[in-house]
Length: 323
Image 1 (cartoon, rainbow, N blue to C red):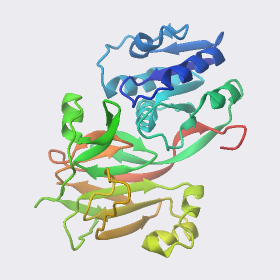
Image 2: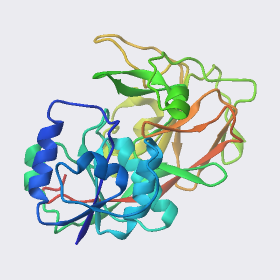
Image 3: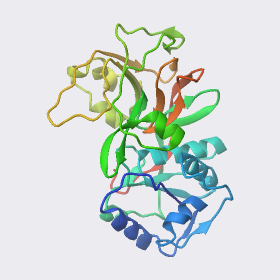
């Protein structure tokens, strides 16, 4: 069995990172491990690794996407980072046309997505890497002129994203992060422009307010059940009773941002439940398309993107304890 490792050195840092890495190295000792050059540079002190692929190291998200491509010939890929790291690995696999199961080790700012299986040293010790049960994961596929990537947490149309800067979680400028690989703190603002257009199946959606963020999320059956009987969620309380697996919220105020403890945010919202056959198209916004925390398309210069639900967007694994 060949196991691929992918490490994101830009993931959020925590004091127990080294403990998780040492536990993983102990658990995988004697197994056939491989990686690309960018991961080998950071993990060679922990693991005995075979380096495969000859692509140059670019020191940004392209290294992770490339790792997904190169490691698509392995039996299992271990993503050491956050939700965005796993999303980029899957994007690389999808561009090659071959998916293998991905297991995430939680080192990122956000660690809530379906690929994050290993969150603690005990999780690593208990996990059976040699007897995996692949399961399909629902996601949202994003296309510009071609396939861009897949979201397994959310797609956020915004000027900012949440990240970690010098150990502190904050909102940062999506443009600086995308173009300069620089994390600059910034508060989100309105994303609307005269050219903004939001459509579902070719029909324009016009909220009676200026959008500050648009969020589109896929929902597993377990996630849908959280909305049952909760009328406070408006239209989304119907999710558990439908065959739909994704939804969209257009908000007059940023929802994905940093707030103080006890602070409340009031906003005008417009909600949409999306069927598996629905296509959302967005163009002309002064914002980025942020895929699982990764800014990937500058909508201010793009002809637009399309978003569709895909019940087989990626492969994860079922843990023996069912989690």
